[in-house]
Image (cartoon, rainbow, N blue to C red; front, top):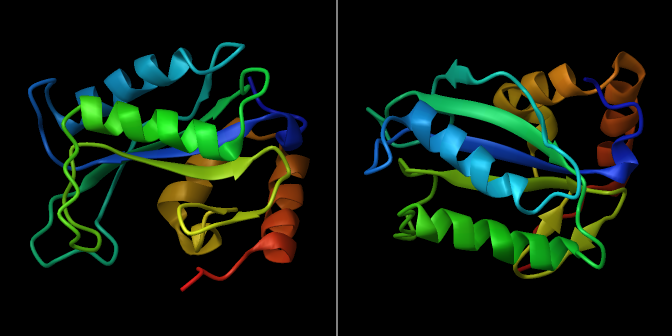
Length: 166
């Protein structure tokens, strides 16, 4: 299924390049998808899983498994409350944040888009910064959007990208 109206959905980027007690990075992604299903009012729309080289990571970092999912947020869900739920999933799967930028990780869940909202707080920036330049985000995103919607998303991101607050 491909999405014909991106504004109805929240889009989440998933990445993993470390194994865990759950299993391989691929198995981590599949487990995160299972857990994200509980946050959606409809079945998730899921891209293929892609193996990608690390971008901006420390030398010697393992390759990532990446995907993008679209979910229909539950009634009264906000971008901030969805982010909190995503962070609980990361923690429950063993994600530890050491403060190192772009370090290897068991699971990484990024809120890419939330409806057609622009959010800029200390904790969250939506649309997600730099996503247009990240092939590992845009290719799986394009898989789950109808062709016309891809251009609409790109236009929306360009018009609504915020700089990170300092």
